[in-house]
Length: 405
Image (cartoon, rainbow, N blue to C red; front, side, top):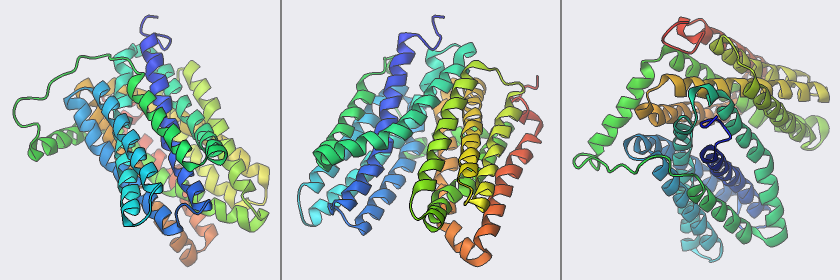
């Protein structure tokens, strides 16, 4: 079909999105390698990662607003260039010494985070501009598949380049890949000028943000699903990020369980993307939330972490389920939210679900110290399973639509 997933414009968008994902996931691993090679110390590493996260959240918030007000393709261009410039500042900072070097690296990390965050809602909102409604689900599956591929290969390739050529050339490679993100996607919409009055005023920006939140509130299924997603990320993902490495080290004396779990999760997600690209799930909302609830098997499996393959199976099932949720969730959002508010609503989605994740990461170890590790894992599993069930109880959640089918 002319507006199916094989049309050249969508393929170029997919390549650009894949490049952005590759560069996004590669940067933290290069920071880690810089620590192992004594280019930076542990305190600097923590500050770089923290500022990157803050920049990402700022970029997500304002990127969606600008994409709805101006041009989504223009936001992809400038956000990618900003991310590339941020990496350039990091490279320059690593090449000099003194307080200026530290300042440049920290500022560059924040700037790169802004670019990374701003590109996310713009890419998401461009998909329905290139794809007909019948092809949205396979298109989102293709976009999600690129994320899984970059999560798996981005850190590996970036780390290999760094070990072969050095941190600086590897950073330069990421900057060049951001240039691909900036230049490869097609110009699929006219560049729209901002209104003559009011756009630069902070009040106008805040009004646009409030309008995006107001649009999200018009869709009860969206708010309930987002609450469930946020709960799963803040608990289940935190167990993965914090407790799995501890269990891997304590039981197996190294990272073998951690690596196996993450690999199984990624492979399960890739398999899920292939399935959801071909199968029409009905009712869409219940299938999506059911897939989200499957993540609860991950913290449960960690109660028996000495059973290596049981943990791998749990992670593979979780990857499969989360991919079904992601694709159906993005498809429903693109279908239900008006085009002129889509980027802002997508920003709200990313901001809540991923912006609150650090809270769970910060609390998981103190809670394990107070209540015990097993109690925390059971609590995380319960929340992961119960939150989607509560979301599914809302009538509009069955089909992820305000209009009941």
